[in-house]
Image (cartoon, rainbow, N blue to C red):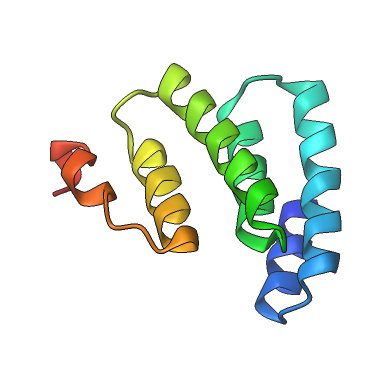
Length: 102
């Protein structure tokens, strides 16, 4: 529910409000299922709306680390890489995406 409210706020370009909702969702997810793909999704969500590039990268890296550990070669890993590269204007993702999605 909180992540959904974060998405609505992000769609309205209310980044600070979205980040607040995503952080609340993250806190619950970390308590309920630490190191899970749900936690990775929360890290990714925060990265998308973070106003500070350094913090965004940190959250993308945390999401990627969890996804690589729990579901290597998955679409989640690809999504983390794509979001990171899009946010920072990089183009390195295509060469390392899992073959299953190319």
